[in-house]
Length: 405
Image 1 (cartoon, helix red, strand yellow):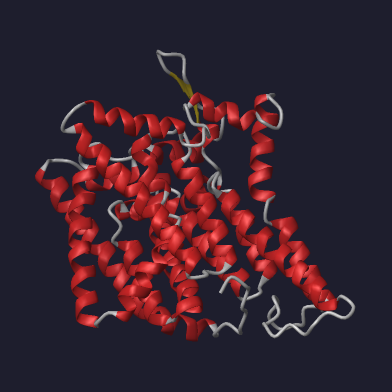
Image 2 (image 1 turned 180 degrees about the vertical axis):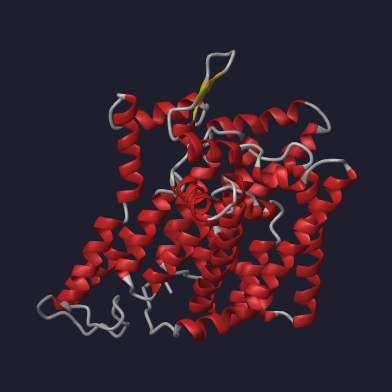
């Protein structure tokens, strides 16, 4: 499955009917998580809605929507937290919702998150269904829903919006809809810095397609028995080549446009965005800071237990990725997942946020989804139901405690 295998996608109505069980299951899991959060918060005399819409990064997005860019907080240690670190698509949507309805910016962020989470679930199903079949698609969506930090999918954060754009961009690549893939990659690049992962997937798929096309048209080239990279056209179709090239042009415009604008706005040139992130003590150090953080856990007890847990968590992520490689997941999925995982694990940012940063890496769940889809339905239901309850309880405990960022 490392080659692009395109086939005609089902009609929109047919696709929705096919995805309905996955979406219903996803909605049920999220409803359980929200209900548990509201009950837990009420018992602690806290507002669950405030936790979802007006804490941590959600406040920064609202400030961008309300005040625009330029707001910053200077800390006593000299760090400067600028709202330029937050990409603009979510605040733009919050502003749009507030402009056309009586909802506040925070309400708009919550509404966008709810809608985007359903769109993300549908996109995850579409990708998994395309590669492994509908049962695996349903399991993949439910696994994404029951992740320990799955409650973030219902927060006024950008994870759900980004995952929706990324999943549908990847699906567009897999089905040969190049312009759609490039356009969605552009929007993903306006949502989070990890939009680079979607760009990398689109570019890799396009380059592979161009290379295969060149080989297929070379003199004395043997016939290629595998399907061509473009749906509704032959590999040598000039229109298909143009769509593929346009996708490569469109894909990086979101990320590059915002980063360059920040550099111009700050007067620090093309790399000005890195200075903004440095003010938040964010950077890419190849995992050195995270490794040191884990190692420090082993200097005392019971902190050492947390260190063991972190090592097991990272090992599980690596194992899932390697399993995807061995099972020959489509190349765009492997590239996308690899970049998301590398940026999450090898960044020097707040270490408690790493599970949240891995939320968009949904292809990691595909090996587990395939295994669950092959098990007896009752056994799969028991496993997923038990994990859903545990995830709901953990999400309520987490947001009422340390929570994100």
